[in-house]
Image 1 (cartoon, rainbow, N blue to C red):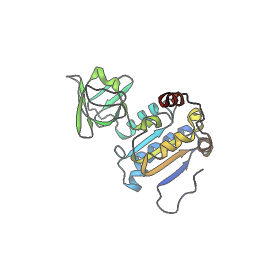
Image 2: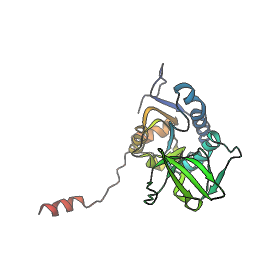
Image 3: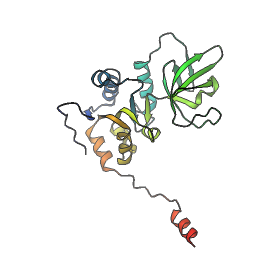
Image 4: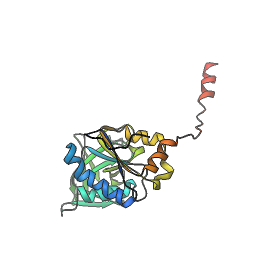
Length: 223
């Protein structure tokens, strides 16, 4: 277990205890929108990434994305489009969810919505300085990215990560998943949830047997 006592000065790791999922959700919104930017100077939409073990449940990626979108980028009467269970607005952070070789964007690429044209039925997303056009009918390739599943975050790094952890994530509470989440943060990691869930994740290792036939292939190639 990591040391969970609050440090006297500024630190790069914090654990904030909250027992109920509703309280954890409320804390995450306050942390991302107010407390982290005020204390550490991080931009809520560009520097802070929430990582959660699951997609479903109150603390899953889908629900938390909608909650954080309302907090960080609420509807102001500007252009927006509703497709495939998401509402996309100007300034939203989004993730590409599949490889698209025609657009030269790939699963896991993060971008920001720059234009929405309801007349032409298309949307422009900026991926690290490169503008990519989407017809409204192709928006099933995109999802909101204020919150990512830990699996989706593999290979990426962020200045700050916030990780909700609760026993409702029971099936996904494993040491390797927690390690992946914590190591995504370059400068600051904040875990919000219960000590019980954190202890479960630390104790449980992914011991499932993997059958790759690697040994047989190596033996065959050596013959």
